Image (tube, rainbow, N blue to C red; front, side, top):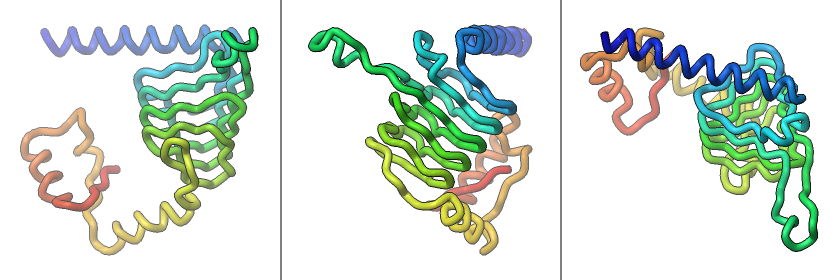
Length: 184
């Protein structure tokens, strides 16, 4: 019974998210194909027409795309606003904030918790507050590829959160020790 209720609850949340997202698209948000938006998000609803997200992007939970800045309103009488453009094949990490007048170039990665105040060149990894360049995506991926090629275990899909049991959790804990782990 609980499983059925949980399934209904998650179906409702998915419906609600899609309805909200479709409303933003109707108001001008440009959303590419194959964009994965995980859980909750905030895409500036009053200025969503200034936001473009390219194809094949992943937007992690709690990402905020804020296309306006009302900090000048009380003092100057007007609000600033600017476009936000996210290129194709980008990964925007959990709890990232992207501010007005920012472009994130294609094939870039933005680390979790970053505050993106300036544009990011294509193929760049950025992180921090404010977000700063860490390295190129090629270098970043090469680091982890070398770790997996040197013998680190890469766990298959059966180790995803939905299918974890106590035994699999223990295997994951034992495999990582003080290192990072990998799941397909």
